[in-house]
Length: 81
Image 1 (cartoon, rainbow, N blue to C red):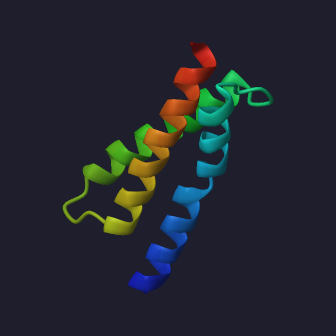
Image 2: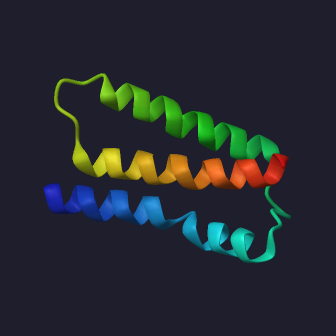
């Protein structure tokens, strides 16, 4: 089960990276709404806070939430900048 958790979490964590790469290369976030990014960011941050509140932390979920928080944070920063 742990392997399935890692595969799932890593797959979800890398979903944003193609967009992050494109944004980094072009410097633009065209086609991504600010509302989408704010909702995604808030979901990741609150999920991370919720996860940290548990006695036992799931490392796959921690990796997923951390990677997505950093990635969407970058996209949101580029969008509002």
